[in-house]
Image 1 (cartoon, rainbow over the protein chains, first blue to last red):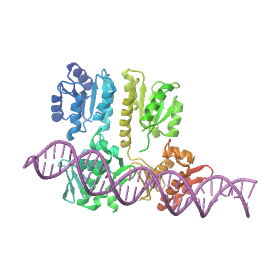
Image 2: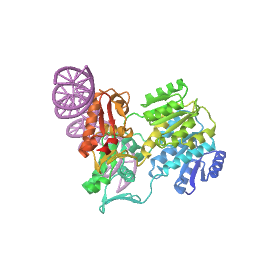
Image 3: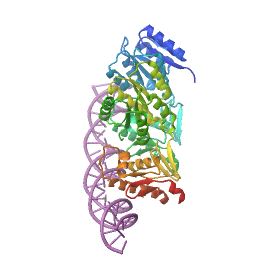
Image 4: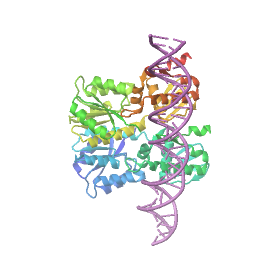
Length: 236
Length: 236
DNA sequence: CAGTAATGTGACATTCCCGTGACAGCGGCC
DNA sequence: GGCCGCTGTCACGGGAATGTCACATTACTG
């Protein structure tokens, strides 16, 4: 496994230095940013594997950057660990709700930080990559953000695309609406669970426009949620 | 989705009581244990979805129980959150290395605890893969929430699925209707005991539709309840 | 073998869950 | 501004799943 790149965002140079030391000892590669704009530039330019983000920053609080990262498609999956001096629990809850993967209060022990970072990286590294996915005649082109069925392009919105992407990456498995919201919409977005139903319907409709049989790929699991099942396609 | 069962392991009754309150407000079902042996018994008998484990316990420290749980196959995937009064960072690292899923220092805010617990449960319920149970040609696919008999899918409702799941996890043992209601329907649910009979019938019917022999897996123990007995399948 | 308690079984009302169409808000684009 | 695509929410309707009952059947008891 190659060294993971970690971006440290904090306005105090001494803390950045301390973190750099701790990270490099543990075989991480370290980037530093003192404010939000520098941080955002480095995220785009250097695509780090993880961000350590201070709560209070000049030029906008850290949570604003967090919101922005979780809002944008390209950076949504990037793990973020919040650092804060505050101990009030509401901040923790707020941070977790916006999508932080973990939360550590200063002063913290480097060893603890490293241990938690590794735990988070272990989880997120199990996600998939690849430029296209295929199920029968159905081809999902990730780069061009298109879905082809028997050479013909299917029309669907961004959410339906993400939904299909997730399903194709995790076939033969039933997901609850809560899980789908979590994995497709993003960590902690607050929308009604029934919204999932509507997008499932739109996705089914899009698939059906290409070939009615392919709409059956998405099955309703009553009392639970939905399932993407290529297995049953072959049978039919 | 049914309420998650949480086991609280702490020797102080006041803390257990506080946690029970916090958990029940958030729709968790709460079990309590004051020591390691009681805790282990409850884990085996009640199979909770998560354990809140105090660091210091009479009769062996909490981390010993944690080691044991992570060592044994059956309990390896069970999420464990460590509770501790100690603030020394080495404890955190040690706990996480042994396999605790999170670590909270007392005093902690109930809101934070609940938020973290939910995050962990979301993860663990969507991470476990490839788990299935098998008895002869009968395969219960947990992830995809399907039941296959000789490659053919069986139709049954959610309750029958849960019932079968429970039976397959606890074979060769007779359960009373009250016990089945408790374990399958969940505690705090009041329904007539005879309701169990009806669902047993529906389950038998579903199995019979696949292969009549498999309906005999579920045996009536007169005066007691029912039993799932793979052993008698081989004989026939 | 009769009597009784326990279980099997079909039917039914109710509740719950899901599919679906409609609609308003929002932001981008010409 | 006006149009348009996308999104999230709602309300309605139909159908599946559930819990309960009444009655049939079975298994023990003496």
